[in-house]
Image (cartoon, rainbow, N blue to C red; front, side):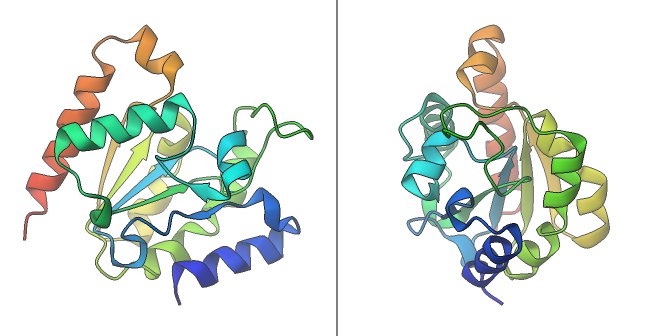
Length: 179
């Protein structure tokens, strides 16, 4: 099963295809070694239709810069969300924090995502909500599981060390799974 097939299944189950952005086709995706799990797609991801560091928002921009600083190549990654559908307001202008029930519902789709990535070596849980999936992921994959700070402006601006800490995690990730 491909990642595209899993996304189609999620869209069908969720009942609102437009609320579930796709994997960025410019990334490694099915062939990726590294999976980055964020919380849930924001308004910009829903608007563009992709979970991408090319999206026009500060979280995406910060993530791109941190990956580049760590020497992580686009072909090595897939970016997804613990909750794969939009959980914000009806006008899709503001996301709300993921609730435990949202995360639990979204986790049902993580195992098929992992199964669709035969070269997966490491999962990085980006932020606190994504870290809620750690125990579940530990039961369904042999891939290494790491965590880092969320790349939002709020986190980066309130913790001056966060960006450098993320870069070090990404460098460690790449070094620890070197072919």
